Amino acid sequence: MSVTVSTFLKMKAEGKKISMITAYDYTTARLVDESGIDSILVGDSLGNVMLGLGDTVSVTMEDMIHHGAAVARGTKNALVVVDMPFMSYQSSVHDAVVNAGRLMKEARANAVKLEGGVEVADRIRAIVDCQIPVCAHIGLTPQGINALGGFKVQGKTADSARKLLEDAHAVEEAGAFAVVLEAIPAELAERVSAELTIPTIGIGAGAGCDGQVLVNQDMLGMFHDFTPKFVRRFAEVGDVMLEAYRAYDAAVKDGSFPAAEHTYAAPAGVLENL
Image (tube, rainbow, N blue to C red; front, side, top):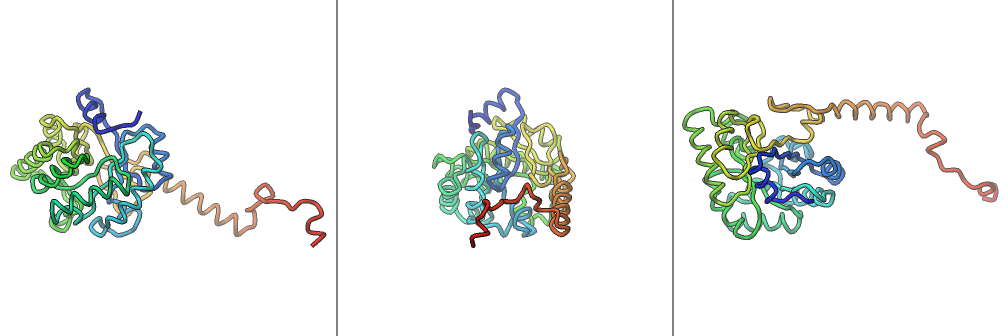
């Protein structure tokens, strides 16, 4: 049975943990979907791990639609959440609704995700009023990295922790069905999770959240430019791929590939009659 936003809420109520992981292409989406993971996030982190941009700020609506649609085509069961990129919703409520609609129609998303708390509550409410499910994202918000002054843990002071609690309640009241908590103290994330009726999805926010999300390439050991403290590598796929590429290169150059079993033979007599 396909996972829906109602499934998320039910899992929260029953105390069941929610699994989410990023994916950006059809092939990966099919494997994730087959694994039983509850949700796929088509994150604007694709700017880093797929496009080599160095940040998420430069990611466009066209990028998100392109990758989102590929993931949707490879997914039958997992809930597909697509990120709204930088400046697709910050400028106005109207832009937020229009761009969320594009992600639903063109990227075939099941839900959209946007960053921010109190300051974007009106956008969340307007999008939800259009029957589009919204996942919120507070704490460390990568699209605001220039304003934040870098990738820094949030909620470490009394004032910032209070602001984060206000943001969490604001996005819930605006109608978000879930909220991502990124890079905040575990104790604060646990309190947020206890106070909200919607599920919290942690990334660098401890085990007290209702679910967890990781970037695919990080947890598979495929992306080495920067490894956050909160990442656990569940496999070293990058090393396996590198070994395979080197073996292929060597086999081509020493003539051992392709071998006879990889080659088509002409029917008898065909070449003699040319």
